[in-house]
Length: 498
Image (cartoon, rainbow, N blue to C red; front, side, top):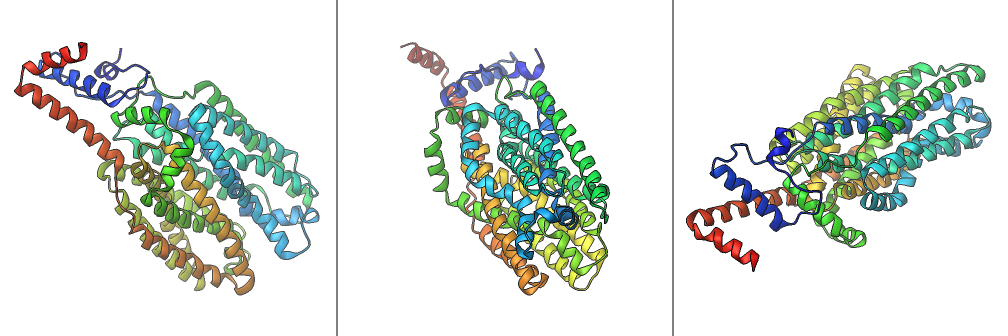
């Protein structure tokens, strides 16, 4: 048995407060009596890195599927022209639907998805998602024909449904597999996969699918693009089937032990009622939705935005998107490490809101003055902070809603972001058609100002941290009493036996 496991062994059964205190008390007595000089701890397992790595590899594919078509929207319109509406606005809306479908299906399906997570666990949710994503990827292969835009839309819908079952998992995987001082870092690693997938989605399609005048050449490039992704998704599905495990033998933290108990007892409907009564969470739900909704709109409309200011720069939009995403990778990881060190969830969220707003304002200024290098720089600044906002918001939500499952709170956050994403994409597209890109450049900063103000009003009630402190305080109190009264141990044993 490993040293880690020998420190503190628990059964797989549900553990309540009294049992937890007794077990830890026993350990403290052993330490006092020099029976065992190891530090009081709960075990973590090396397999946790395989688990989070598999999730990251899979998250890459789902994020890629979301963005990889709209970044070459001008080529998609040219290729599928005969099966698209003749009206300009309807044609643009059909194109935007390739990304909006992810948001449309998420909102009604997030509740059955979180219910499935509660009843069947992480593994079943991830397998369901991976299977649907692989299915959608192969359906795209047979949609390569100018008259099959409807088939392309159907395959994208299958991938969108798949995403519903996996987006809320990073915080849940972190809580189930990682120790108390690792959960924020683990959550950031989970969102890291999403950032890499977006980066690949921005970079690869413009460099594979050429803007040719021949639909036959475009079709060959699309086939190459779709076959590669389908093969990758099939491999990931097989790896998840073989290697992904539901949970470790023992919980990785004391708070997770208590959360596991409450999670087994909680009523799903009552849990949703309670979480929506949580003022802190409701404000976070709004601010997260606004921030990520603006991000989704900017990502979806990046191609027409850049084309308006920099015509004949067909690959520039993809490169700017790539810059935004790649700069977000260290941002996501650093945010997780920062939270593990400082536990300043509200302050970090507020700071990121303000810095995202600053990046967007300078980005818009650079676009207006056609300073391309400044556009790249500001895209990187914005990407760095908005990527860091994901793990911060997830962990903030887990803290203020504890002991509610992180999968439920994360799922609701994403539902909010999808709803606001639909609103901002449609609104920004309409403003671009009516008043030009200037309208979009005003709408997004104003929305971010509102989100920053509301973030400042979130009550910082860190319930998970308080639970950990309460357990330790109870242990210290009991141990101190027994140290002062040697007879108390005998009295306690007699009381239990009676």
